[in-house]
Amino acid sequence: MTATGFARSGHEDSFARDNLPPRESWPDLRLEEAGLAYPERLNCVAELLDRHIAEDRGGRTAVIANDLHWSYADLADKVNRIANVLTRDLGMVSGNRVLLRAGNTPMMVAAYLAVIKAGGVAVATMPMLRAGELAYPLRKARIALAFCDHRLTVELENARAQVPELARIVAFGSADSELETLMAQPGYARFEAADTARDDVCLIAFTSGTTGEPKGTMHFHQDMLAICDCYGARVLKASPDDRFTGSPPLAFTFGLGGLVLFPMRIGAAMVLPEKAGPAELIEAVERHKVSVVFTAPTAYRAMLDKLDGRDIASLRICVSAGEALPKATFDAWQARTGMALLDGIGATEMLHIFIGAPREAIRPGATGIPVPGYEAKIVDADGKVVPDGTPGRLAVRGPTGCRYLADERQTRYVLNGWNITGDTYLRDADGYFWYQARSDDMIVSAGYNIAGPEVEACLLTHEAVAECGVVGAPCPERGQIVKAYVVLRAGLTGDAALAKVLQEHVKAGIAPYKYPRAIAFVEALPKTATGKLQRFALRQMAQGET
Ligand code: 3UK
Image (tube, protein in one colour):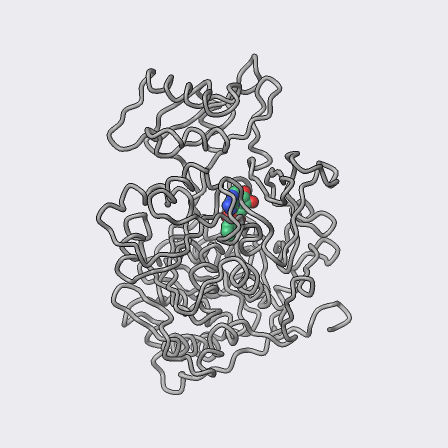
């Protein structure tokens, strides 16, 4: 350790460390308490990839996509070649940020790992982002180099027109793309992992904020392993023979962990469907005998309607995260497949899931218990712990935690060493955590606090409802009223009679004062790029309507 409390950096370009928040506004990072110990010199790709080759597992399958099969040795070869291209042809020095833009393809995985292996900092972006949305991370993370799927270059070229600091865009993804051509050079098959420190930044993940500018969350080499060694090893408990798949983009840390890091930590395989809607996920499970799936609660609900005649017998672990898992969805999935969904709350700031019960300890309807290595508590506005059963703000700490890239919002997320996620939760007497709502999403109607997700969960128990979102709509008498936006199952049409039926259904299921006084039938709900319901968009709609 140096005098600053950091290990000696392996970065030539010190941008990342220079732009970390001041130490006093970091959360406590509790590795030792979590039973984790990593050497001071650490490159996570050496651990996740090279170790398998060194220990004779190079022949195991690492990546499957349609007809493509890469062994760990194949993947290591691609990664080494790209790392050589980065350092020999593209002038990357350690600590430089490299933007990645692609869907969930094998080359995206290889590029991600290569940037990190070469000591760079990966900044992955979702394929659907447009020029304006790409300009922000380019500027904020001062990015001069980008790898881009050859089918997605137009928007990135347009972003470069706004951000000239982006000096170079290298396309990949076809046999004659620039990256593939450079990779083929002789002598590129080997690459020694950059000698980085365990607390050197290797990833800046931007939040897909529903309001305000995105925040860049900075993660260290040790964080990549810590999530595998906590959630992966202690809750998920997958085995090397498992095959992982899922829908979240690799630019979303839910996808990076679930589809890439967790399988690689144990030498298992990842299956990457490029399009990962409910039908494609089922198809991937069936065709490639997938055993572990990571996706959002709405996707499990949507898959239920498409399971007839399909063989998903290979599936054994199904993780749901990103949004609250309604009990109706948990119950319906269990009734149809016999499997209990593994709910888990994660956050980009925390890198991955920090509360979620292992299979043998699930309580339907609750998110779960802290992942071993993490601690969680419920606090009031002043940060004081509230009694069990009382809703309050969720606070967590563990081996990973929030460090925003040059952002004053750091002091709002971290309080006295604890990460404040912005969720309202309650803890029961048995230590289980029950999601209520995003803290700023609570509806206050005639003096009652109403959690939209609870009303949604009840509406979802009605067979006519495919999806729904519940928000507060302005009301002169009550302050707000509960308003539900409902997407009906295929073939049904919404009318006043059905609205009445749904209202009665809610009154019969939960306290009647929570029933939606207004119901609007819609074709689809507004979602973020990561698939989350955009409540602020519904609230805006509700502003204009009622
Ligand atoms: C909400 C949940 C209830 C919650 C994520 C797994 O979602 C992820 O990261 P984001 O930064 O959003 C964080 C926020 O999403 N949320 C996520 N999971 C649940 N709410 N139940 C859940 N199971 O508001 C949280 O604060 O996009 C999830 C792994 C990695 C991730 N980045």
